[in-house]
Image (cartoon, rainbow over all chains, first blue to last red; front, side, top):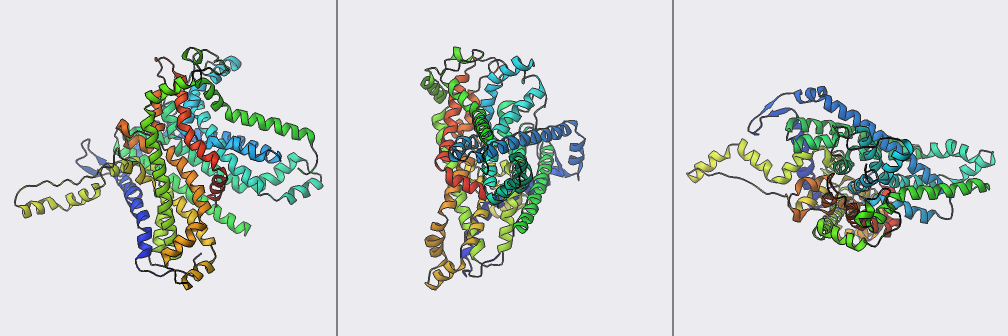
Length: 296
Length: 306
């Protein structure tokens, strides 16, 4: 869509877009290009010489059992985070949408965890799930008879970062679901009610299908969140441990590149992540475009 | 809703309250823990009646976590990112929507593609860039062997090093984060919905592009700007990876990063009361912004979907 009525100036439009272009070129495109280049090079430890080695870094990467493990961990982690935060967010939003009188109050009481930094959410849950002092850990040990120890056992540590990451995201999902629910025409629900559909049936046959665009969007955002923005959670809670059990992809890039100073491995991992996010973004835009056509 | 379902309605409210309590539990618990003394906070299970140590714990956290300096740094970083992002995107969107020039599509696509390059996927090269902004020019200098030329001109050996580092500076914390595809999109979408007649009328009255921008576009964008202020302030305040990479000087540390030093180590005295008091203090500013500007925030957040 283009405006018919536009201003004419030879230099002004370039001047206006200049700050954006300068920042993107310096901090987005140049580093991304550097990363791409480094991913097909091998440099000696002193950074003096680098040789072109085609895709050796990538073949090495996908043969590395630690990297394959990290992929598995990330998939498990992001699926769990998305599942927990979406189902809870949707559940609470549905309830809140039914409660006609208290909607505004409920929203206020549920919205603020959005503003909590992932790293701080990590600190809160680190305390709640602390093997000696945490109350949730105490309850787990007491009620389920589990010998809870996230410092030593990988699965416990994984549970810990899932809880801290999902908790924060519930309120984000809630905001979208409540907006989506309110956009569903009342007349449809009423018509179904007159036809004798129970509230549960109405939820599954009318609300959920009409909410599917929101559901799709929220799922994509949750996956991006759990892939990239949970870095702070991992850094505060487990540092990827114990024994790499919580070493999700983003954390591994940081560890290999910034702590381990392995340039080739780190940049080929970056390129893999970049490819991944390009695919996700394109998928999302394709779908959003379809949605626009559908609703006219 | 449609029919009367008293049982279901009661159940709804009960589940809703349960949901709110579950979501609020970590914070409620942290608030209680922050008021307890060290003896009480390390009892298992911890007493649920608040103690009277809140201010003392706060003070300890303030000193130990260096929160005075860190909060100021976070505030400068978050506001810098917010203001920078909004100005850059407003100008960018104005240029893309209201002008017709040859490189317009190129500009638009290049902004669009930054969506796919979050800082997390280009950690090292971006760090290198920030460590020396003039690095690319140095590279060019070296590959062209301009050293030889310089030596020849000067008549003796000289070494040229180009260096401009953004490490441990506010510019370094802010600059790389102010280019934003999402903000530019939001403004672009909004500008496209503004009736053409407004622009035509302004032109007929002899307004220049910048006058139109200042007197008509900016006042119309107020709600959008307010929404983005909330979203970007929270985004800026909660940044983790980037400040972790580029700040090593304790004077430049941000509040969220600084909290790390409050977490009790395994063989340390478990000062969780202090750690949680500090955490509460650091999470407060963005929470207040979200709560006070809730209406615009929800609107802005939901509109980014489109």
